[in-house]
Length: 471
Picture 1 (spheres, rainbow, N blue to C red):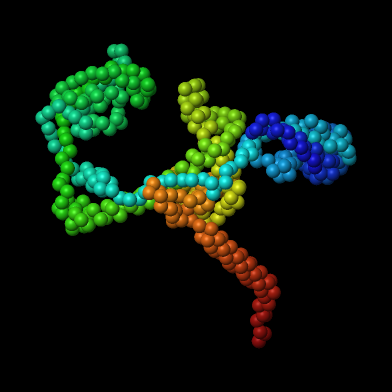
Picture 2 (picture 1 turned 90 degrees about the horizontal axis):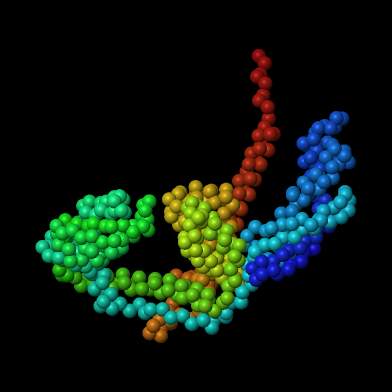
């Protein structure tokens, strides 16, 4: 088989493939066999009709069409392997020539396909990354303490105009023209939270219990989402949250500690742990951002369009041009990131162990609310396991890349991220463990098979029951 590649665009190629008759012959033989099982020819049993009779009955065209359809995908895969192309979508295949008769000729076809572009990554050792220091400040502790006080605060009614942070019990009605399109009653809302209607915070600020005001706002949901409505809101009560004093009594109320100092020490440990973990997340994000700034990543438009169409179709919003534009931006970014990370994983020769894959699948199954075994079985049936391996490899690629970069904090100190990104030693140890477990499993399976064969032999050679003794 011969193949040649023509680059049409940075992300699209035309693959021309020539398959000799001898390479196509197994597919032709299979075509004869399959057709022989389908046709009825007097004097021949089904499946035993000779090729020359099949050609007389159904024609060479039907035979070669069946053979091409049977073998085309395999020849395409072989051509991809020879050319090291990495397709990102299904190809558009055009068969340009087939053998005109048995015994001679070639199969020729072209395949236009969008592929992963070749991109040049920078040397990782030249990349500089800086993350925030893990130093715990007094403000950090105050913030955590205030959040804890909020949990144990009490709401108290006040006789004054509402201010930001107050809790207001409201009745609300929205009209479009003369039609009431929405209404709620007795809903508690905190001014400043911004989780209801646009303009509600401003409307409630300065309102006292029993007072009513109106304003215009776009509706945030429902059949009239985005349409502007006339909104009437009444404050039935105004409450403020009174926070407990920060002392030993509060420490005993809010934690397992007896004193405020013990509570503060525990909060300091918590904050330090969070900041340390955030360093790893920040470093990963910063590395990704720096790579994207450094490398020009061409994005295949066909792949983007297909993803956008799939997304909009799943939401039944194919005609929503504004949403299409938003989804296009997101899809372009996601595919660009995928191309970059796939290239990085390949450059670093990232390997995904079975344990890493299983850990990822178990975590993913929880997000979907499924049992891990059921989730994995569903993926296997849908042929999605290779895609999951790719996801793990992309995530691991950033971690492996960070091992080659000196990360410093804002104070100039070198940051040790090995707890979060692992090390070559831990990877090697895990690989050795996986190999040992696989060998042990193979040995156990072989032993079970051998025992079964011995049992079968023993049963097959068991002596017949003796005849009863004659008197």
